[in-house]
Length: 64
Image (cartoon, rainbow, N blue to C red; front, top):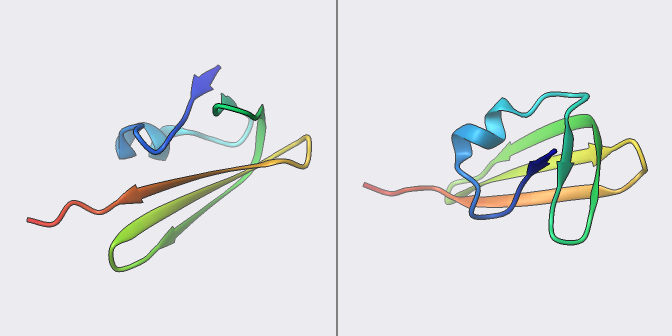
């Protein structure tokens, strides 16, 4: 099982595939669908789980 949070490295989040089992602080399940939304200042990872729950991870973009 893969633990995800806003502190997870972006590279680790990008490696998650449909069928992987993930968990956050309060939710867990098998990934059914993944959506990545890119905004100007952050990326949002939306993981839809088979149990009809959703885990959302928001990553602030690094500005150089």
